[in-house]
Image (cartoon, rainbow, N blue to C red):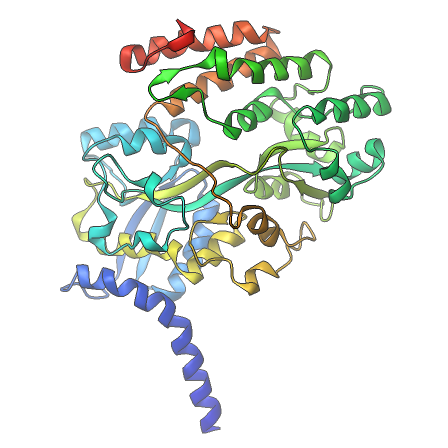
Length: 427
């Protein structure tokens, strides 16, 4: 009996040691702080995700209560920047989508250097640490997850119109971007025009842009040279009837109506699929994009300098939790690809997702392991990418061509950015 008790205590010590050692640096940064009850505020645009992570966090830190404030994505940046400028209701932690990283990293003096608070950037996966530092070299955004670009596919549509839902066979048919045209033609022909390759123009546009963000070279905008070919590809998809042009409720219903083959997003879209197709267990597969793996999306945490000074230690502990074994497992369970360097243990890699009936974590890990995937975040990326996305939308709803879409994007970008960048071939 005594041996069983000792074994149990040993197991407990091992469970807590991996987090405890890592957070010792945070304790050293706050030598006079105890473990008093404290409530911190975390802003997020996806409250459900953060609530799930907090459940695991509170098993280790029950005295730190995290009040997750849901802010709609469409309002998120404007509301945060307004509160930051006034110093009113500034959250202790702000969740930052990678879409904003470039701009927020350029906001001098806005965020704490996390290294000062004991957060170790060496625990971040290679390739992500340097791109979340500001111009002064300070580690100000803690990466939580990064998006692995992919094609989610409806197996029923694949079987019905392509003759198979085998991922190996489908991957063999999708080696180049142009291969999508042949697949689109087969689906259109075999369905009599009732099924489509993609649900809308924006999702494929965002994936195409994310595959190589060379719309800027240095400080020079080169949309006509580097983006126009991709928009012409979208124009071809639209002209041939391979894009469904779904919006709003029709887009949501398409997941259960078996009319669209590919949903081009990233690993994190798994959660959306489960939400809209609740009875879809085993109905979905996933393929790597043609031409090689790249990132699309992701998120992290930042600590505003204007946040409550009394909450800094608790905030640092909550942020640092994402860079621990327990925290990364919680992140992975929310269908995200963890940015913690040691997240993918054998146990995680061998676990099958019960909804998709596949080892998704192993699949995404195998796609990325050993590959140097370039990432960069620049101050005006969000402005440029927003305008490109809007013009892809207008191609779908107003039937403008690719050349006009790029021209419109250039005009809008000039109006918003002015002389902050050069306009190269887009004068």
